[in-house]
Length: 303
Ligand code: CP
Image (cartoon, rainbow, N blue to C red; front, top):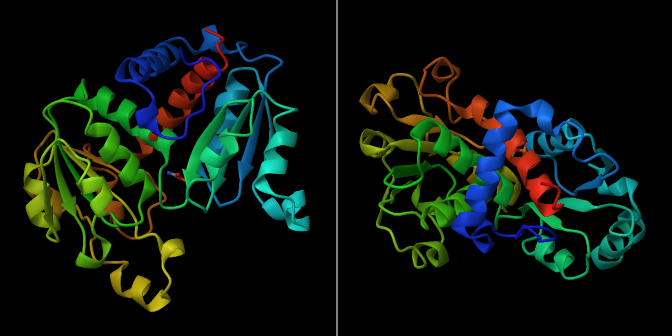
């Protein structure tokens, strides 16, 4: 039962509950008109304490396409946070006005904290370098679409594995499926955190060689170096172009491999990859809207 639940970490939902969301997303993709008024008279608050294009716009588009309405901010300085109001007081107030709240914040654990004070479902839209659950729902729906299932894949994740919250959420979520193995491709300075590696039940290897990683992957998940999480700008500049995926490099990849990226892209995928049929990162953004439509319906108990 997903009605009234918060989404803080995708692993808090069972595999059956995730499949319910994906099944509904499939249904929305095939018959969007059936769902166009389902959220009439419902309000979604969208609280973005960090910049966003995809997550904010796809949530807004999702709610509007369902017939609901959206209010909120993408600059917290326009709210009473600028006068020193606490997050707790902010959420207790806003939860009085709306039916569901989406929040992105630079500090790890913020969505969890807000969920303790909110009667309305809280959806974590990214908390610092920790987790990004709705990106993971997007990623799983995309993999399920192109690969027909979520079991038995070699998933290579490449880039900033230290700070990349989309990577952390995805790896932990994919580890729940059978027959999955991971290739962690990163510079030494941006390796996957130990707490994640130690929790995995499926096998993984680590490398700093993109070419070696590409050859055996079924899914190549690229990510940008997370400039906003670096203490030193010089260190960021030194590492930011460590990996650049080009069309030439894809010659070594399987013909049915897919290339994913949560976006935004900075420089880690060359533009010439966009026309390769294995590049699915822009289609991925569309799956993000559909899966968020399904999530909103489920959390509001409207199906
Ligand atoms: N993938 C993602 O979270 O993109 P935005 O930062 O643009 O929302």
